[in-house]
Amino acid sequence: MSSKQEQPPRGFVAEWSVTFILLLFGTTALAQAFVIPSGSMEETLLVGDHLLVDKLAYAPHDPVTSNLLPYSDVKRGDIIVFRYPLDIRQNFVKRAMGVPGDHIHLENRRVFLNGHPLDEPYTAYTRPPSTYADNFPRSPVEYGVFPRGEQMLRENVQNGELVVPPGYYFAMGDNRDNSSDSRFWGLVPRENIIGKPLIIYWSYDATTDDLVNPGIGVSHLLDMLIHFPTKTRWSRTFRLVRPYPVM
Image (cartoon, rainbow, N blue to C red; front, side, top):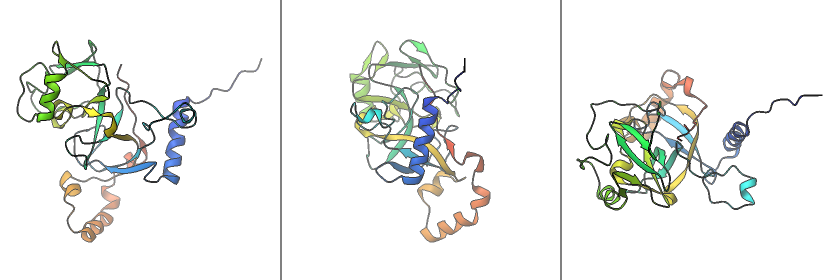
């Protein structure tokens, strides 16, 4: 009796297939280039990582197209790119920690999702514990919480836990002490989500100031060309950006 040759997992094949298609034929309708400008996702994503964002991943779909293209719903643990709810001209990248119906709270920095503590090896901390941010939403509101975040706390907290309402997602940065996220400005509307990072096509060792205030265009481009060999993080080139499944 002949044995069947072991096949690669479907998700792996689909992931690399989409990567190849986007690299060859990507347009603004399929993929979007995105540069990480801040350290809110370190060490998962670094300042200066240049990403291709898969805009088809979470696109609306029907029974026919869902069998042809790798559409999916936003899952807990997915890294998502979305329009910042307070200014949709800006794009943010965070990790989706809660989907509609989830109950979330933090105790001494540890996330509890639907009553269970999470194991989060991707997180980083850079300062002493905070009362509000590390014991969300059970501690009194501190500085830095926007009116939209205060509204979330008034309307969506039950028995000391945030309950994610339909059509919204709770997102946090992996660098928890250096992340402006849902704890401060509220939930991410589903319609704001653009897609998910697929691959780091180039990683350049830059600072936030270099990326936000690059100076005169020609001189900045020349500087990048001169330092391309030494400031490129070669080990991150063409690295796939993978989610970390959360319960």
